[in-house]
Length: 189
Image (tube, rainbow, N blue to C red; front, side):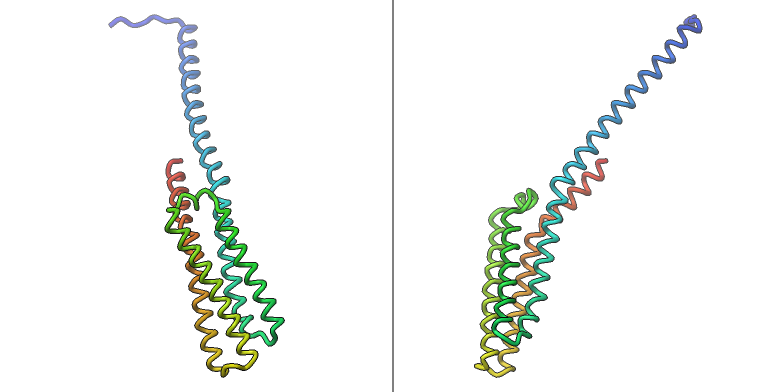
């Protein structure tokens, strides 16, 4: 076999050339990985985090409404009932605003099915709160017996709580999509 006869200078140049080539390849790989990581972080911070914040706000408002119902039931005056009703109406309006101004992840959901269910649930909550208000108002004016009023109030409270859970569940369905997307992005990294 014929061996290349290279001097020390040529051997050093080849070695430095190989080091330079290896460094360039490693830098290109690192740049590509950094770009993918940067894109994933941008997606998380611009899409997923705001959506999760909205989801948490919807849940907080639903819990607030659910907590106000027993306080409204324990009211002793029409002024107190009206104050609670105003707070409930404000909370429902905030839920509707969050539903309308939802993030991109909500818009990825099937438009007809989920939004219609959500609209129906919100309307049913409003109707339930109105029935609840009337039942408590009747109780305060002593038109029914206490047992009849309390039974009706308990049924309406359960109905409203179930509808609130439906609203939260339907509006948060895409949370699972976001979590699976985040898992997929994490697996890619």
